[in-house]
Image 1: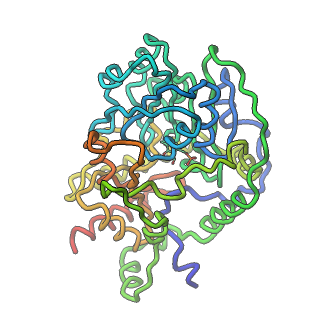
Image 2: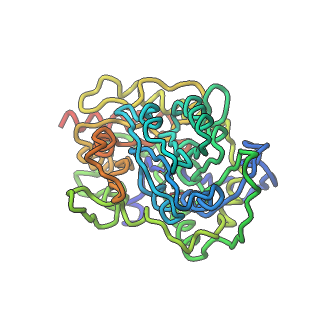
Image 3: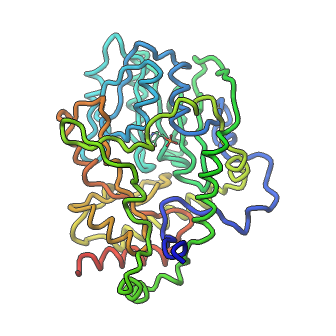
Length: 399
Ligand SMILES: Cc1ncc(COP(=O)(O)O)c(C=O)c1O
């Protein structure tokens, strides 16, 4: 019963469509067809793809310009790969500052890392031009931007290399992708080993469990929720579980990156699991883009004008496949906890501060790290769920 009681109604990762799980799946499709002219490598995680590109781009001993607004999981593999991180400014709208990138280029710089936050494009054309002018590699981080496009061109196709993290957008237990676009680069050879059995099985079971025991939108009636809460049953995944590692604070008083974001060297030569590869073949890209956009627009309009937060993005540009709906909140911890009690897993977005950066210099990135909360809007949810989330948000303000 506790098992059921903790099932989420609106979780952060889309669930597996269990009915379709054992249907015949096409042999090909998915990522290979998204970048037909590029070389594609599947890795166990997005961060392992980043570790590989260090060797591919020969980054040892050189500098990589890195956005100050980052999660930390992308920094560690670069450092393990021998690169030195030089952070550049990202403003309060989560946009990379191209002037700052220009100023920071030195004769040691070899690459610029760009992150498309929540599926929304950075000014990638201009950054590409800066890289070309200075003969730098462009690393396009699409960990949060699977299926997104800008000006009819897929994000991930501007970089000399790009990386993806599959479980953030589709229901797979593991999987990262390294896409090599540049003809300047040699074909990448590495000794692949199968996915780590224990870790992949644990992740598969957890995804399977949350897909099997999720509550459907029909259960979402707000009155029923309030009566369940009066019985004292916590029906969501508590925030502490989502961000479960014990918090460690540095001398500057800022919390460290959570333990599960750190880099595990033993995964470097591992590829994605058989289960992920199987699930990937059934992915319907057009349907995912359509549903995510519809959910985003629906939730954004239901929330517009509410007190206590603003939307990070004022518009949803054509081609964007949103990861979720990012809010900039006055008090995101209270909102997150309130939603969690109602079965809605919102994500406190990147509360950890990587120890390799001087955060005093990046107040805007710090602001985003302290205020952004991501609401779910993925393809496993529908308009009823968006109404449910909006209602839950409204009840916080009315309490
Ligand atoms: C921007 C960014 N890049 C890279 C990664 C690494 O992806 P993964 O978790 O699959 O290793 C993450 C994930 O935490 C991320 O947020």
